[in-house]
Image 1 (cartoon, rainbow over the protein chains, first blue to last red):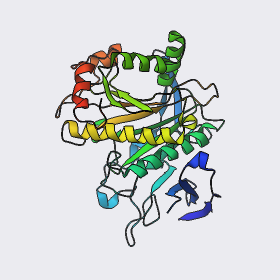
Image 2: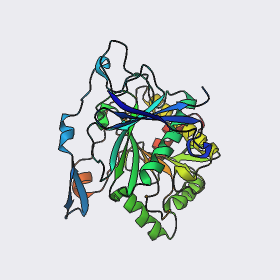
Image 3: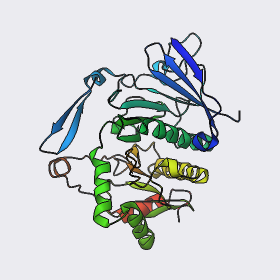
Image 4: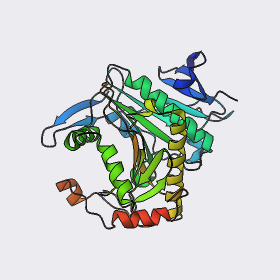
Length: 40
Length: 303
């Protein structure tokens, strides 16, 4: 189902605020980005 | 792959995305593609048991590379939630998600304009009930932001700044007054409860906002949408659209969020019909001042 998972390095606060993100390439080539609260 | 054709009589582009005819239509909760994937359950668009905010390429895109993009933004893994009902921190997080997508998509060579929006309710054509919005990254500048740029030129400066000053001076149509954000039913509203949520400072897009302004925007949007739901004691359908600067680096534009709710009463819809579609002139059954008074009575933070 997933063909690749890449967690981006800790993002600069001024760009992403409190959020971290993980970028995933699905099996059909579409991109899924999961944003999560970095303070958790 | 979608096809663009220029409609000469209207002077505007029409996009044909015929694969969308087959898109998922009002599935029951057990088959919602925007829910988390439950152990033993059907695979959804999000192959995890829980998530906070998820963005993915639309399976039925109106635009796609190398001529734009179409994305889905899922606000929560709670199928029965709503933007109005999000935990306030989640709503604030969503502002950062919108900002990140605006920045990344807007930097692409094939993107001229980033449209962030939500269609809420079957009355405005939503096909999935799970709380979510969408992003269309246009490969051309569409007519509405083009008209806003024309308004800037006509008024000799930022039109939204000028209209904000007019609304503050008149004060009759203001429905929410925060330090950073003002909301009002505009003087010439085209929908019965049309509402504009406007940054008080001139900010072309989310990128120029201070973190506190993003928090304030989230708070204002939730106050307005919670008020909407109270107005007729029912989930209030709306189209919510972020208006921001085009992505050509000119910096023209003023971040504001417009709501186009179709209800004119608890049970009656305003239809854009003969006069609206045939002549382009909206006929309203209610004055904006009356709409604003009704909304002020149900919105926290109303003046």
